[in-house]
View (cartoon, one colour):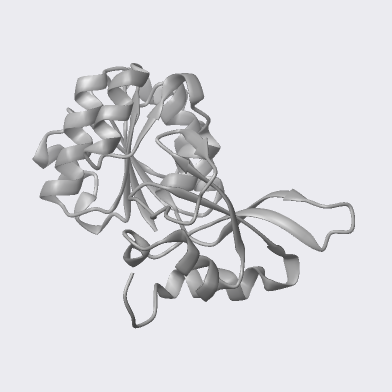
Length: 222
């Protein structure tokens, strides 16, 4: 898949290397051409000099064929504007913005712009938000039979009760991560946009459970 990154600082360049290592194509934008020196000599992606929220610059970077966009420049306002353009103008679902101000990050996330506050940032977290498919095993018991895993889910689960997801997937929701904070679900908990779902299940059922969540809820009420 193709990913567009705005900002070629330490974060952006590390993200570009990480995505290339996963065999994804990358275009990276920065208004300062000298910033591209942070990329390795064997970087095979596209380097675009320009403003990351400018439509023509984004088109040059391949935003129209992109599957994901990350705004990780040093400016909160620029990152939010660029993320909104990517989502609202070009219709990308997998968008993330790096925000220095954690309080503002929470506000923007409630508005539907997934954000990563700098104090919690790691390139792995950003990649996980950009490429939300499959599972990420977070813990495994000594026998290897029981795992705690973050499992991606279809957007159609949003608005449905966690108990329904458990029933259809055949796995226990151990916790949700919402706006960067962990929470224990209860009987009335409902999946919200941007939630990360962490399940406990038998390791031999990972593929089956992942497929169930990817398929979305079957017919019936919430």
